[in-house]
Every structure is written in C-alpha cells, then in structure tokens.
Length: 378
Image 1: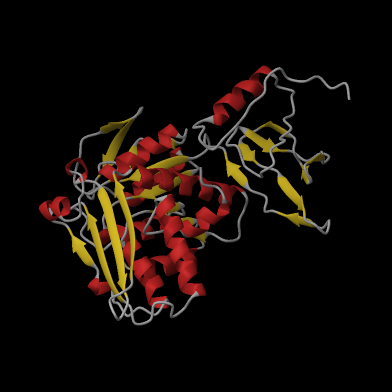
Image 2: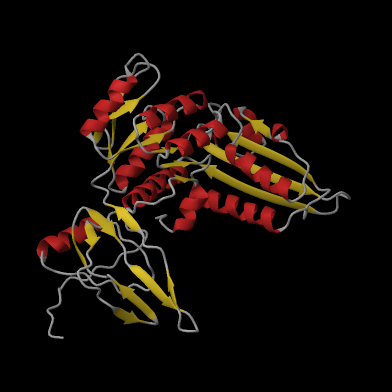
C-alpha cells in the first residue's frame, strides 16, 4: 500500500517489566506513527497509548479480525477488540479491556512500615507504578526510604480525614493498598469509603461480611481478598470448582488442616478457611475452628520443615483427607516462602482495578478469582 514502515519492531511478553517505556521511546521517535498489533491474543500492553476510532482498521490474520487496532500517544493504554471466528463463521466478541496508564495512578501503601507493605511498594515500583511518599501507620515512626521514594508516616494521632483530603488533592488518581492489622480492617475501609478512594484490601480478618456490605453499598471500586498470591488463588478457584461440581464427593472422609505462618500473624489463614469451605461443599464435616494454627518457630522448623531463614515470612498449608476405612488418602499442600508472590499479585490486582475504572465497569467490587479470570494478571 506504499505505506512507510517504522524500522522499530517491538515484541512484548508478559515477563517484560516495563514495555511502556519502550513504546514511549518508539512513539517519541515516530510521533505520527500508528501501531498495528498482529498478536493472536487479545493482550493489553501497558503502554502510553490509547485506542482511537476515527475509522476502524481491520486486520485479518489466522481467522481473527482485529478492529480498532490503531493507537496514538495518550494518557490511557487500551487494547483492541478481538473477534474470533468459530467453526460456523459466527463472530464472538471478547470484552474490551482497557488499562490505565501507570503514570496516572499513585498507590498509597498502608502500612509501608510493615514487611508486606514494603514488599508491595517495591513490587509496584518494579512495574513502573508510582508510590505515594506517604503512609498511614499506627505508632509514630521516622520516614522510611523504599526504592526511590522516601515515605512520611501519619500515625494515629493525626487527623486522618485531613490527611486523606490532602493526599487526594495532591494525587487525583489515588488508590490505596491496605496491609495493616485485622483490627483496623473495617475502620480503614470506612475511611477509604468516606473519601471515595478505591482500594485493594490485602489485610485479613475483621468483619468481612460488614466490609463487603459497606463497599457494595458505597459503590466504591475495590478488590477484597484474603489471598493475593496468583498461583494460590488459582488453586483456591480450582477447589471451589470441585466443590460446586462434585457435591458430596468426599462424604464420610475426615479432614485435617494445618497452616503455618510467621508468629506475627494472629488470625487463622483466610485461604485455609476458603479451602475448607470447598471441602464442606464436597461433603466433608469440618469446622473452621478445627484448623490447626502453627506459630511456634521450633515446631515450624522441625515439624513443618520451614527453612529458618523464612520463619519471619512464610505460608505452609496442608490439607489431608482420609477415607472412612483409612485405606485412601488425599493430600493437598502449598508452601510459600517470602512475600514476593503476594506483593506481585497485589500490584496486579491494583492494575486490574485501574483498568476496570478506566473502562467504566458497572461492576465495582472484585475478588482475586475475578481478577485472575479477567486475564489482566502479568
């Protein structure tokens, strides 16, 4: 068609940390260019680009029709609509997925003073997401540097309403990541709701029924889940599918559940509770109160085989089923050392929530299984 081609070819994959930087550089070199995406998958690339639709550009490749595949530099990153032809030639539309440009949003991580908060702040910066230089905390603390951000703390003696108003004014697109303590879950959520700040609640505990009801009533965008590790969430989802699809499959079986976490975790694992609920759906008689919590470091090393270097940050879970006659045993186990898996999943949840907000999603309250199903996990 006698159209000039850019000498720059970009290949994006899910393991690339900051593809938007490369795309920004390309657009800077060729400001009048249009980008044609020939990927066979409807994958968003978190670039500094947005869909424009003056006239649909249709590209056919391997049975796919991609429309609106022209991009120009803008503040919002968007994907295209992928239309798959099935064997009957009908068109099946996938959802239009829109990702917010990471440069527009700022994450307020509460509490960066904690190990989980620090891990999230580091993971966010690694993915190109800005972290606010502020954090709400409990006791008074000195400023702390995380990556390239020095964080100022606001303790319980501060006027938190005034602090939130100040932050919202400074960062119009503010989003909160909450990793505090169980006793603060509901009061913190009420603060975020009051000021209309979307949030990702990674803290377990609190009154979960009230938490969900309050957010639903307020119509605030939020992700609330007791488990943020993507792979563990996938396992949890698989167990729920088993519970829904095969009710009574393990009727008569006895269940033993053991979970080991760092001694600072005072509540029972939310993940263990969710898995137990799935086993109950499959006919197992078991109560949450029967979950064994292991918090003694000696027992964790000798019995649970937790590496000593991870005593301050781990999650070891074992679910063992035994048939009535004792001749059949099933054992499910997931062991996590460190906090990286949760931090990365939390940032992915925040990015997904940003995308839902930019797309104007009518659904506003999400759990991690829904985030996983959205395909926005990196």
